Length: 115
Image (tube, rainbow, N blue to C red; front, side, top):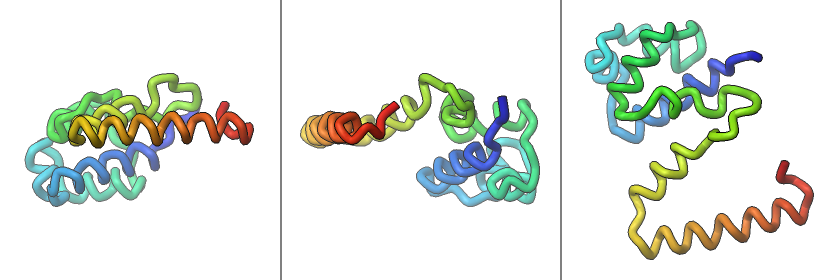
């Protein structure tokens, strides 16, 4: 099984940007260097497990959130993303998102795209 470090870097960058953090601010919170954060986000370096744990804590997410989707057969992929999305929605927005998701799932299945 191959780990997709590009996806891990994108998840870290996306979450950092959602939080409005600079690479420097994230590096300080995770006790890492700003260039190391840049290297991880650009896939120039593979992060250690220790660095991923510190990044997850600094970003307020689980390690699973950072790794989700980087494994080929990850059945929990994107669940943390969906939960994070819904946490920031009003009840009305949640209802609409659910209806859109159900309609999209049905359309994908009918088109034979879903697996």
